[in-house]
Length: 478
Picture 1 (cartoon, rainbow, N blue to C red):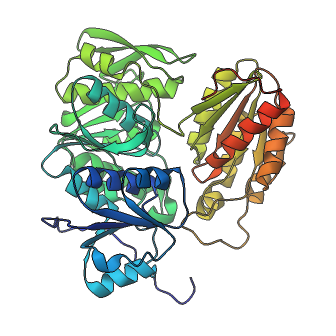
Picture 2 (picture 1 turned 180 degrees about the vertical axis):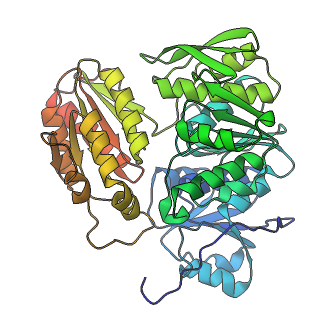
């Protein structure tokens, strides 16, 4: 906002943490990472409250768990708390941040709160430009399947649990390590997993090289690391670090943990080989990338002390993470999925999985661009991904999230760069977008909603309209 200096909340660099958080209040409690922190602290016995600007399934779930949630910017509860947790996405003039500073209470960045949760535990930090939420979910459920009552905080709901986080009693703690503001550098985990590295969050880093430098520091911050060699960016990081404490994985010939015999659909299954032994695994979700992410988790489990056969057994049966190519219904032969993809690489990957599932059918995509800066920087790459991967795309307005609008930056920047002849519509009205998708869809097609904003909330409208169009016939809806 003009005329106001933004004081970006950053993690502490001196390693200090409070001995006791006392009563905790989270500003932005409905966020994907913040909600998990709230849940774990609540399960550990803290009095937890929080605010968020809009109600959601997440805030409803937290309230149902007994956490006090206020929808709006000023709950009036700051005089009752000892510690405030927030993120760099919350502006410093937010009334609750102002009140916290006036009172002199402890203010922690979200990453510092995760350090509190992980204190004294063997921490595994899952990092990567893409795939870290799915990989964290695979790892958390695999360790649970192998008998560990782990503490875990993920950036998305683990479908098997119905929540994104839980407090456990074992010595292990699994964290999704967010690189968007370089806060993943403060955990110093026992094991770090790097799924891939891409030039994202350039509004924070400023350059591609700064992103690579951060991931190099992330690997150096860990006692041991697991790195994917199938990804060019992750491979470049591997070439820059000391390989003696790194286990590499993938189909790349230099990978020590080899992935082979991959089948992507209807569910992902593959063979992994390491040190002269082989084992197979089968997930409950599709996708070559999911199989690759599961292989990275197997690598982590090997470093943590499990055998290859046990590690493969641990990942088998993985049922997915919400909003990661999540199936919502098959109505009249039209299958509906939702995915959080927003970066061009993620978009291309999600569309490839959709085509694998659709077979000879069409992939009809509803896409809500995320962030004005990302759209400004990556409009051409997003246009290329949709031009090549989507049979028909319905574009909506940009979801600005934490950002203020940028003059001249709209969805039109993507539309102007689409390849000639590409099939698309621009329809910012949600009901209009639903009508366009349903009127085009035929049996065998896939409708894929795609955004890391709030577009997932359109899915019930899609399902209702499909029911109307097909006379209430449904198969496999959930």
